[in-house]
Amino acid sequence: MTEPPSPSPPSPPPRSSTHPGPAQSATHHSPNPHPPSSPKSLARPPGAVTAHPALLRWPALVLAVGVWESATRVRGSVYFPPPDRIARHVHELWFDGPARHLFLSAAAVDDILPSLGRMTAGFVLAAVAGIVLGVVVGRSRRAYALANPVLQFARAVPPPALVPVFVVVFAFGTPMQIASITFSAVWPVLVNTAAGVRNTDPLRLDVAAVLRLNTAERLWFLVLPSALPRIFAGLRLSLSLSLILMVFSELLPGTANGIGFTLTEAQTRSDLLTVWAALVLLGALGYLLNTGLLAVEKRLTGRERAT
Image (cartoon, rainbow, N blue to C red):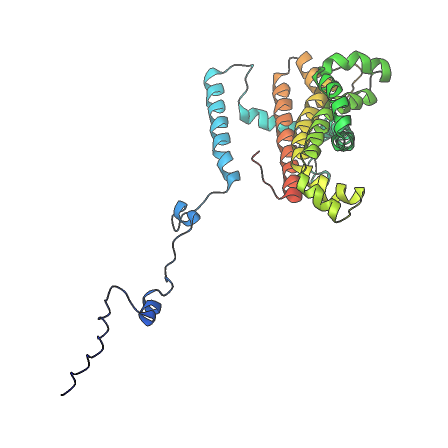
């Protein structure tokens, strides 16, 4: 008998073109030469030009000055001089001096420099005292609980209400003016510094404890950098308040120079052009001082804020 032929092994099924093999898979799944665009590239079209944020402020300012100029020209009121007359008067009054004196006239030396000196002294004293006391209060929960009612009460007292007290203690003059600026400008820095110190990340404090950092190292490398944004928020409020209090302190009797004194004298003589010039000068000084403080904040914290 002959043996039946053994069945041949089944042939492998044909490979479908929809399921590539390893070689084909490596070929078909090569890296995409055109990766998907990032959100920034999707939000900003190619070739688009982005204007600097500082340039966006000038059109509004130019428009406001143009409207002011047109309205005053049409109205013709003696109480509201046009901006070009105010600008010329500011230049003639304070900035027509020689170049070696930074174009400051004799009136600028008598009016602007004393005011800036008083404001700077009061602001620096308020900043130093506010930061030091804020760190001390913020580092202790018990000290913060005890001092918080006093802080809230003191910051709520209007600065003009304290003028009689400062007059009795210091009499009229520069010491009284500096003391009034310092006392009223210290509270924003103190409160914001204490809040920033209290909001330090507890995890970072635990890491500092593990690394066995001493108190000075924790304060310098951990607490103060963490509280810097809140500190600068208080400094900006304190700077604006110092400028306002500087003008107010120079409106009081016993003052012989300064921007506030010039403002009072011009009002007494009904010199409205000088009154408007002093107001424009104060606005420009406030803007420049705030811009300088923002530059320092960006340098130290790496954060940029809108003015």
